Image (cartoon, rainbow, N blue to C red; front, side):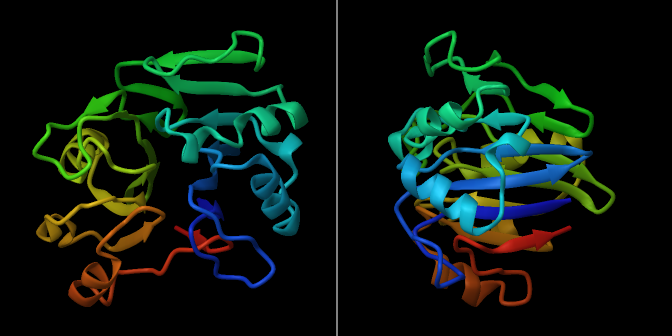
Length: 222
């Protein structure tokens, strides 16, 4: 499988635009999935063009949660390609005619062969930036489960526990916000903290052999 970060606070390529938000392209099982859409449609579509990603090639869109920095580019994307299956948390409302198919996600579910949603998760107030409802994406590979998070509002522990029902965790990619239970990352072969993650430097210092710098334009092949 391949993950291409399209939208992030930083870039790994000079010709891409950084901005607060997150979006990535997931290619697995002959499916092309857009996970989140960043904050601004112009930046999302502009970075996609620079990365030679055709909006019409995308078959599925998954929105992690309702915050503007993950949904802001959705309307502009759907103007380019509304012929998609759109998976949104039940806590997020959207016009019913905006996509070919809208699937409301509450419980864990299989999106397609080998690709799953954790279902809506909600962290406690003890979790840094917790309390918000969010779903994460889980992709089954021959190396283990690849977990893609938007902001990890429910808490990384909750997300990893939900994802581990599908198998051993191989990778964690995405925003981790104020996550500081660093020992949870021990034994995970690939960690790429993006977007809102506060303690990137700390995670990198603790796990230099497994940590990957994020940024728009980064491609992770697993």
